[in-house]
Every structure is written in C-alpha cells, then in structure tokens.
Image (cartoon, rainbow, N blue to C red):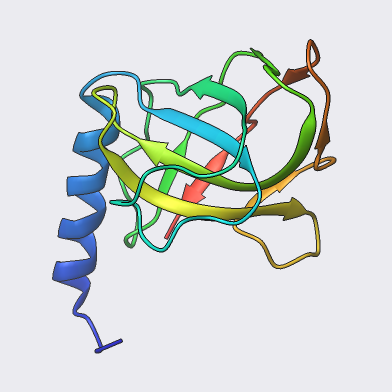
Length: 128
C-alpha cells in the first residue's frame, strides 16, 4: 500500500465513523472463510448478529474505538471463521477473520466454537 498522510488517515477514519454512527452498525459472525470482497454475498452459516453501539469515539491518529455491544443470542452452532461489519442499512464495510487471542486474527473471541442459544458480546473493537 502507498504511504498515506496523517490528513488522509484521519479523513478515512472519520468517514468510517460517520458510517458506523448513522444508525446502529452490525457485526455478523459466520462460519467458514470470508468471501473475496465485502461486495460479495456472505458465505457460511450466520452464527451471531451483534448490533453495535452507536457510540464510536472520535478517531485518534486514525484509530477508531467502538463501545461494547449488548449480548447477542447465537443463532446456530458452529465454528466462527469470519465477521462482516456493515452499516445499519446493510451495506458491507469490512470483512475480518475471527480467531482466539494470539492467533493473529482481526476479531478475537474467547472461543470460536459458538453454540445455538448461547450468547456472544463484543467488548471492544479497534479499527486502524
């Protein structure tokens, strides 16, 4: 990727913040591998659909921090593999890999095995 100025990084972070706070954004967790791009239809089984808090702190040095979500009920049992962040209107923004701490994934869960009827919560989300 090309080197970016601080001005561009800040502008991109603020644009993403605007999309996330226009209505409650969503983080959907799926089984399997992410599709090629966020414009591609979701693949795998939808395990959980977390409604994000509309509280997103102002970006600091291009970094956004999203507040915790309420618990979401796990809709189906399976192994979490990827997650999609989307606007309240359903426009996909980012696809991210899911794993446990130390695994090098973008979304970290305490366990990737999720069970129908259980609960999952996002304690924080940092986007750089």
